[in-house]
Length: 265
Image 1 (cartoon, rainbow, N blue to C red):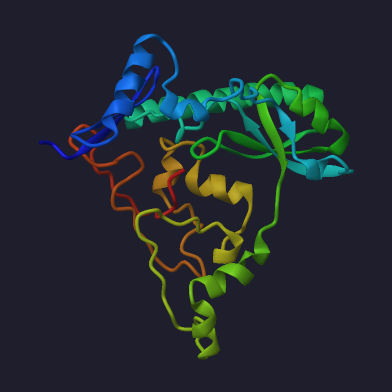
Image 2: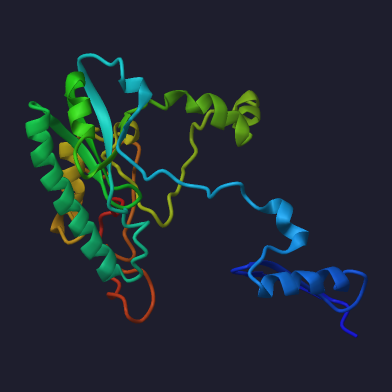
């Protein structure tokens, strides 16, 4: 006799099937109740008094911005899913979705420029987040949040103090206590590339330098050349072994190595 058990969810409730034992009489009653459309006695206590409801998402403003004054940098998340959340599998479909998001962001910024006169575009993102970072006057934030495509308006935070938590978390505090400060140590960044225009890595640290190094899309020829921005005093070498589009597999674009190790957006 089969001594195992199986649990299955049905529209009427939970069904428990066992090979043998004292549960069978109760289960027989449950099956009878289920056939009649009644809730089985064995799980009647689990019944909700009323259906659960979930409020539809709506545009919200970070509470930290409620009392803000003067010019503010804000992260504006838009409603259309980012590339990462779009479930697009092929590189071509992902690029098409990214282009769609850029068009939507451009259209939003045109509306934002009217709702928030003097608004300045700082940067935008499409891969992990569908968002733009704007610099606006605080009194315009509510008008931005009222836009039909806006999901949330958040403050732009400074995370510099994270080192006080991450350094001991990874065990680096013990290494520092032993007198190791990184002098003379080389670090290799594999797979992702590196933004050598970042100020911390010896670059200019400006949006213009980033665009000069990478361009405005994966197809921009600037992302295959160093453009006089690389190497820097801290990033001393690098190479792109695959190109901007190759993701592996026989149906993807072929390898296209180049001399520019800048990260692919």
